[in-house]
Length: 376
Length: 251
Ligand SMILES: Nc1ncnc2c1ncn2[C@@H]1O[C@H](COP(=O)(O)OP(=O)(O)O)[C@@H](O)[C@H]1O
Ligand SMILES: [Mg+2]
Image 1 (cartoon, chains in turn blue, cyan):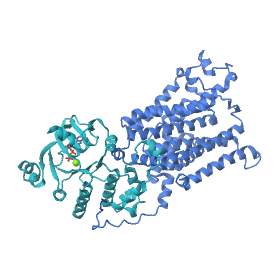
Image 2 (image 1 turned 90 degrees about the horizontal axis):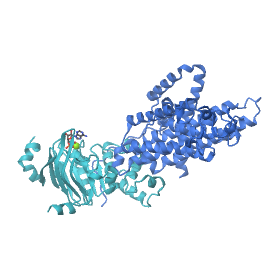
Image 3 (image 1 turned 30 degrees about the vertical axis):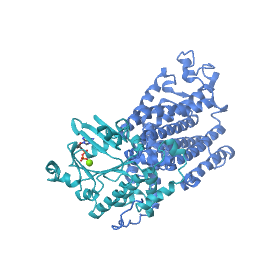
Image 4 (image 1 turned 180 degrees about the horizontal axis):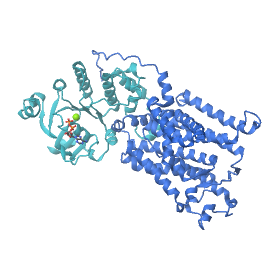
């Protein structure tokens, strides 16, 4: 049981994350800045951001890699989780804002609002915000999936409406009267759970939390895909109508995995926002969701660990590349996608698999004299 | 008696009509299958044989007509999954299975067991699961290949695997669409034997073009033509029918 759950690859990934969760705080906080081993806080935040993307990639791989649902809207779930966390962080600012209003965030005072909108109630509580970071994307995914999967929208059409969903949300969140800070979004956070959000120690702690959540995401993902439930998901991916004719309610399986995946994406977004210090409607941009698909494709879809690896590698590449030639990143990304599609159709891990998998021994032709017999 | 035919039949179709954009694929199709019966359906291309199976399995909704299973269940109101859960299994003309999964996982997925997501995620498999899979693999001679990916099997082995999946489902009624298309003569005869074995404890409807195969089955034959039943009876009687000769056999 444990062996199926923790195959070699997952074990390596889990161990790496566990080591990072411990080592990074030490390198950043204990090792003195004069030492070459010291890890500056901005690097901690940067790698922490990669890990959040890796969690998003694992979530996307669950639906795309295993169930064949090519969601081009997972960035929306990520952003919703981010907004939930952002709302908590805004309410933590309290009277320390520019306008000194103890209850209303600055942008509301600026808009001349007198009362806190209902959507903001409860967000002073961290547990409530954390719950909402999962429930809001989960509820959206459930409602969306209920409509789409029951009407059997699949393939390109489904991908297009997921893009439309995230685009519509972006437009909505741009509006000031939505009450989520309009195009400025939410920022100028002060502290989280009482700790200064800018301090090195908090950054290190957020990093470790991201690493631990990535471990959990991989374990939950492995639990899902190695169970019989996971075999049904793969069956749906490979031959949806066959699965139906075997008696599986395909729409409910899709709904279940889509909702769980959206909640995981929400958690990733919630961890991301305190590390980057801002959330704005740009996070809903359709391009973000497409980038996430590329991470998964690069790492190898249907592998979970590969998705996480792809997210980290592509984003590392993005950091390096945008440092040198910022205008050309999108072209580079597009080129990368084309190259991977052409030369590594199963991604990095898929290619490793094909290298390792010995060519199957030829199957002897079915013996003409022994037809299979039905046991009476 | 009409009513007796209805309540005592396993499958009862009456006046079933289906049209696609005005083209009438089925026009008043009526057919009754008794429990335990095996029936062969023949008819020229485009006669509506596959459409009939689509109607029975919930893939296509008829515009008109009655489709009852076991005398009570109205199949026109149920979807594919519900109909499969009632005990209707289907084999497609082209072998369809889960190619990227192992042979034994294909059987496991087909094996009669709770189908809900909750059961497949948290439920414990029945204690005899392994034993049932072993028995079916033995029957279809794929025990040695159980860990192999279904995609790696030969064409004949795939056909057998799909038959194994049907056995695993243990349906009350099996619908088999052109099972011997593209098979050698020897394979065709083996498959006839296999289906006759299965028919001992299952009701089976076989659609087939191959007359030698139908003769080998030795069961009652229904001839479809232009979406309705043209003739019904033993093969010799049906093939002597001048109308049948005209539309089908004579050509
Ligand atoms: N989904 C569909 N849309 C349009 N026409 C269809 C569809 N399915 C079947 N038909 C038409 O209905 C007729 C009967 O088809 P079918 O049931 O497949 O015949 P058979 O299996 O007897 O060869 C054919 O003329 C076919 O072109
Ligand atoms: Mg046909």
